[in-house]
Length: 139
Image (cartoon, rainbow, N blue to C red):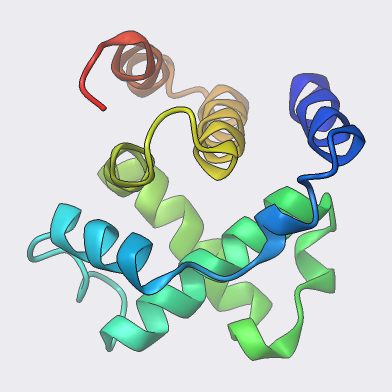
């Protein structure tokens, strides 16, 4: 968890933390939606809600805010946190990370967050697979 805050501080010191709080661009969303074939509807009613959900998760991770501080424009906090866990377990975040690019600051924060989540709930196998995926070339 500390590494995520260190990374966030580095982003802010370099003057790019503010930029990382921007919503997904149309091009980024296109790449993500193509990386989730058949999965956009998974626990999500529409692509627009899926995009808003990803933007909300990125907002929490880039601002360092608590989930309960998530602005209402992203949806209900409970819904987003439950969906976040489902996406961790289904491997959807790995697809988002690859679509954004492994060096994208949001991808780094998502990977760290997923890693912490898996570690906290004791999913050692999924955690190992996630770490291997982040080390492999392919972006």
